[in-house]
Length: 86
Image 1 (tube, rainbow, N blue to C red):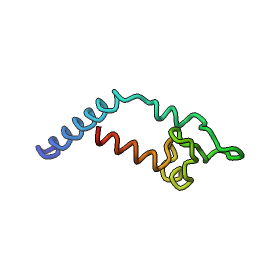
Image 2: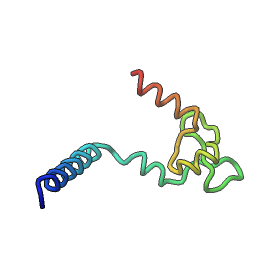
Image 3: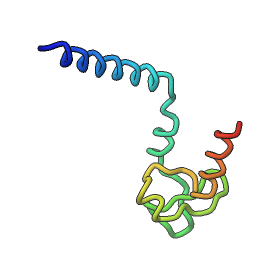
């Protein structure tokens, strides 16, 4: 193994350790919340879910793209804007 291979191996090892440390402090509440059956509109079933903030149905296209989504796209945008500005 030459010096370049060794450096790349160490770089990857440090990157993996940093990622583990970063995610170790995060709670799994979002993941747990997504695994629980969500509130469905009357007459609806799995695959349809209400936004936990505004109560409107989350768009089927959004759930197809992001199955663990708990917010509709409008509430998600508002949430992300708030995180960026404050």
